[in-house]
Image (cartoon, rainbow, N blue to C red; front, side):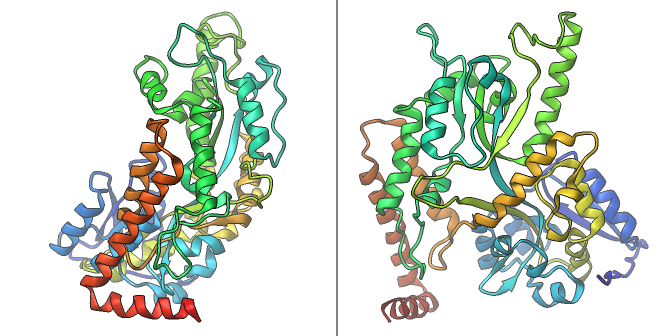
Length: 455
């Protein structure tokens, strides 16, 4: 690809500010950029990642040059606020257009045929499992493509409860997101034309019932109350990833980026075992070796094909910033071999450029066992879907209304799943009608969509 050559600023270099999280991988990523694009000086700002904060600052003329977008709903919000630079033509010219990334990920960087960013990484989840816990309790490892019935059966054998504790000694599974189950069951958030929320469909009810059953019927996933109790106990950490690393959860649905943390757990557990002078089979009084990982594809409903959700963390250019043309060079850089190598070396999900997302490119001689996770992740992209959005309602608003009812379902066994989802759909659809009534442009588009759906 032809490199963009930004001109020097008054100090000899153009200063570019990138708002992103403070991942340890950001340093080598920034160092490579500054080396390749010597006319620029990129620096990280990890303290301004809020959506509204970025919008307000950008509109006031003091926003960052580049900022990360964490889901399609945020992409929609930024676009409607007018702060995203349309890079469609520049991307084609400089080799980072939508054809460069995974087909399903293209939806996470574009809206209505226009491109607004390029992925910093691409993520799909797989199922990690702790071989130590399976071996300890004499449970066979899951098959490469399990069904939910098989995972529930395994999870019951791996959930070990004692009568004197509010939490289990070990849980079978974490974390099956309700949105994931929704798509796996054949459901959708919106109708095909985007005019209606359809989270009250039979498929959605089936999916959400399983979500609650995992906690309250099968009891293989920690309930909200159990999660709070676990967080209050010292040494466990504060979330599912920590609890899996502490060998308190046997299976977890997560992306291969979690290997960054799991490598650290394994190293610490090996060092602790050696420091105790009692060999590697004991860790802090627990008769388990340091974490030993296995993996398989996500479970599926037995009568449905496999499905997972694809996410990316696209970087976008501030349309209102003074360095727009120069900031585009960073998006070009995200598709480069040099940047993609930092993703592969650090196991920070998949590189945005699919040309470098191969098992061979991701192979790390220091961690050869991780080839399995790379292969399963790549395979999962073939049946991945992007989260839906509607042009008639802000995605974050719709997700909040859906999440409010999911919270009711998980915290109270008296709440009926079908009734709660009916409420969620009614709330979202009421907001859609309100938005359409207040916006003439939306009214025209809404009427056209409904007419097309009837034909």
